[in-house]
Image 1 (cartoon, one colour):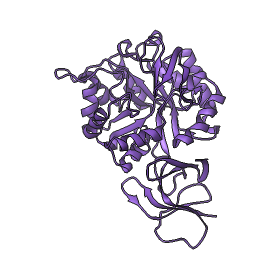
Image 2: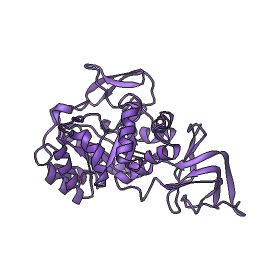
Image 3: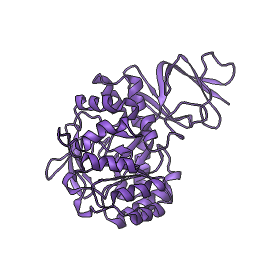
Image 4: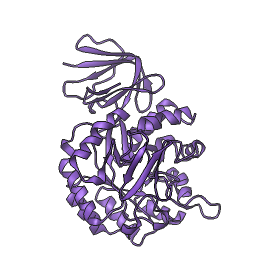
Length: 386
């Protein structure tokens, strides 16, 4: 039997509709939105709330004590089970720079199990590294960094049974352009990250097919008036190419003014809110780890114990949505798009998530007027309720 979500407004891609009714068919997918009260089926009443697509986190390492690099199916289940409480219904489990062998194993574990893990849906693997620059290593281990090799990527993809969706590299590394062309040919999206590249090196990479700047401003050469660098490329190339900029909007990684500059330069339709959340997300202040490094979580940040550098975040994606609205740099509609459809588009999964349109899986969130999460639905069924 069809059920109908009744709410005062619904966040579609181009417009906010409502009040009205959004059908959920027996198959767990959306039907066509309607304003008139239905004469059949049951009504789920959210009259004082808003409905938005489930959020899509395309850059997340862990949550609730589990990390993708643990290479553990139970850990993946923990992450997927926890993310709906952050409004996330789809995500890309994200690796760290590590040995080729460990990444082989992690890719195989995810590839063998992703389709059967309940909770937030795994949509592919994001390989963050290891083809980075030691100059901007951040919380990544430089011991494993080197030049990109297509045959290594092919090996990871084979181990993953085709689940590798995205890989981040430093475009100044030898062989980067040929590597990018190969990855794109294999339907793998290429991002630029942890890099000291020049503007021209970034542009060459984008012309070869790279389309994402990872956590813009962080782990990259900054903007200089005589050498625009990676930041200069991130601010300008989206106007010329089909390119997206990631932002971590926790108030620690990027100042609100700097975040607004990205949004104004490349457009909110090309700005993807991500978390870069590590295993300590959802645990409060504690001591934790990121890869092989000890981390201290305090005052809303995760920092490496040995040098104080930021080590990912403990941000929940719904908090990023709330922050950009609170900072006055995005409307609720823009903020929700930047945390759902835009990241989905950046890695080509907008055909399965990020929409409230007919035929899409009924993965959605229920929000109050302050964008506080009230419930998260997967395939039309409540998975998390406040």
